[in-house]
Amino acid sequence: MERGIRKVEQSKVKSKGKVYICGAGPGDRDLLTLKALKLLSECNVILYDRLVNKGILKMASSKTLKVYVGRESGDPTTNQKITNELMLKYANDGKKILRLKGGDPFIFGRGGEEAEFLSSKNIKYEIVPGISSLNGAAVYSGIPLTHRDYSSSVIILTGHESMEKKKPSIKWNSITKAADTIVIFMGLEQLKDICRKLIGSGLTSKAKIAVIENATSNNQRVIVGNLRNIEKKVKKEKIQSPAIIIVGQVVGIQNKINWFVPGN
Image (cartoon, rainbow, N blue to C red; front, side):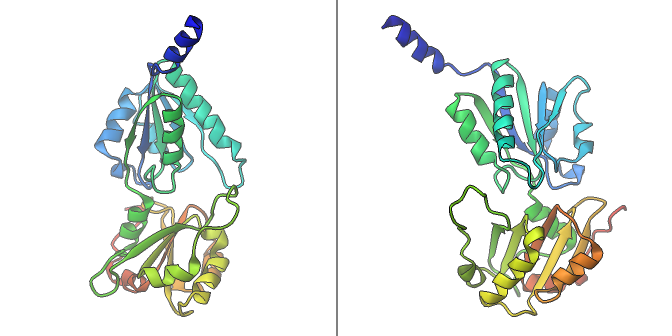
């Protein structure tokens, strides 16, 4: 009986290590937060994703262990399990771990899932917000998500829902009626289907749409069109992921306030 009690008590003791689930921003390393910069110099281990600017990793100490845990499109879902196991291992070793993610960890960044895992294992953690590609893509392409004349509401959604879901949860018929501006993450591969669904949900085929590739980076490209011709334009320019899609009247003023010149 005494042995069982001791085992339960030990399981409640938090690990000596700590994990910081942190956003690295949308691409431009100058958009990194001061807190993230501080953690880069303090942490023993960095577990980083595919979309983290490699220049940001160079800001860390050369003694810091840097482990790539990024997941490519089509990679097995077990990749997240491996990431969880690494966080657990290094935390139990007493390490200070920076779990570095592109954008913001709570906007399609699996930050919530990882925080749940750490909580279940009684591991200390903090969550550090980052500038999301939601903001980065809009601002650096010259598309205001809200505008007094064109948009009073914004909705964000994923173009690639989890394969583990029994059925899709995005209510396309409601989306076009719920917001003036629609922002879609991870939707490039499904662009044709997305345009079809938006038209079928009430938008005209002439509705403005923009696709922003590599937002805020020196490789950023912006393709503007309408729901009828955007897929053809994207294919012609060979646009690739990562890309953010913005739909709405605000796209129509992009050419007036397009301030960012990649490479300058």
